[in-house]
Each structure stands twice: as structure tokens, then as C-alpha cells.
Figure 1 (tube, rainbow, N blue to C red):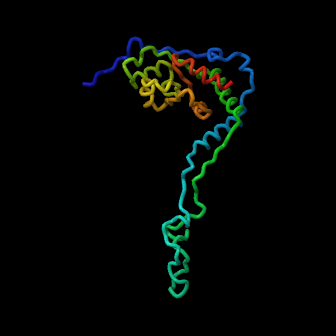
Figure 2 (figure 1 turned 90 degrees about the vertical axis):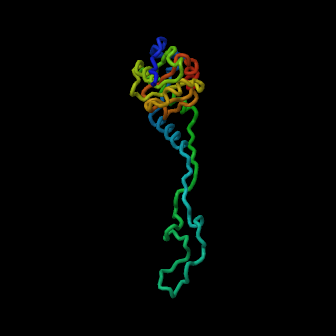
Figure 3 (figure 1 turned 60 degrees about the vertical axis):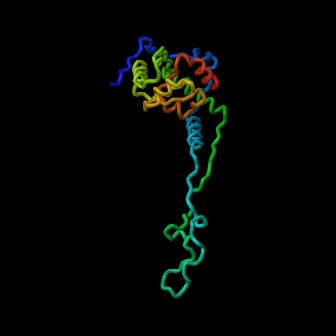
Length: 220
């Protein structure tokens, strides 16, 4: 018989929406020009392009496994003339102008990257999309996806696209949330504009508040 796991008494979830000052920013830091939409598009395009592997390739006529001799003589056979079995006109012949392995790297200025990330941060703070969760002893007995659903439900995040920031050594949180499709787990050195643009909420635990502050302060 499978034993039913009960949410511990110390597993109550409390939600807090941080302010700009809670994240180590002051009013003067907020008086900056936000990124234009074209800058956001440029940064995300560079991220998407640099994420491509560039390993697709096909064989040209010099790569296929056929001899380069003439299949039959030029005249007298009644067949169409042919010079090589490697011809792209033949089955299993080489491909004309096919894709080849290549890597294209797009770069954007560091100031533009910071400006875009800062704009996302201010927009998330203004919209209340950043949430700090205090979960107590919810995972004291080990990881549990049921408890993770409870945590999201208590925070009003169930069914929302959540970017959840956590430490690499927090095994209980990683194992509990990794099976929930709407939640994407990130370390504090992983976020980029593409990740943040597709998240409805940014979430971190109260025990990791210093790491979250350190992450967003890099965008000043």
C-alpha cells in the first residue's frame, strides 16, 4: 500500500512582492532610459541565433561514395550520356548547394544587454510579477511534486508560466518542480532576455534573496 504524504504543519507558504529597494536599487537607479523595442528584438535575435548548433550538413558530389569514372561510353549505347554517378541528377548523387555546417555568432554591446535586462526588471516590478516565497519546512522530508503543486497553488501561480530561480544545490526544489510543465528552473547565473520575456512570473525563495539581489544588481 502506498503511503499518502501529508503536507507538514511547517509547510505553509507565504508570498511577498519585493520592491525596488528590497532588491538593492534606489530611486536614482530607476531614472534611466528604458530599452527600445528594437533593442529587445536585437538582443533576443542574437540569443536565438547563438543558440543554434549549426551542425546540419549534406554530401556534395565530391563527398558521396561513388567512383568518379564514366558509367558508360559516350556514344553507341542508346542511353543518355553521363559523366559520373555522383551527378546530382542521379539517385544517391551529390546535393547541389545543400546546407553545410557553420556557426554564426551575433554580438550585442554589453550596455544594450544590461539596458534590456533592466527594462524587464522594472516592468516586472511595476506589474507585480516578481514573487518571493517563504516555504518553511515544506520539503523537509525530501522532494515531492505534490507539495510543489501545493506551493504554486498557495502562491496563485498554478498554470502560469513561471521562471523559478534557485540554487544548484537545492535538490529538493529541483526534483519537486522539474516535472511541472509550466515551471522552468534556472540558476541565478542563467537568465537572459529570452527567458524573462516568456515568463509570466519570476519566483525565488526567501532563503535565496541575497542571490537574487546579486543577480539583478549586475544589470545596473
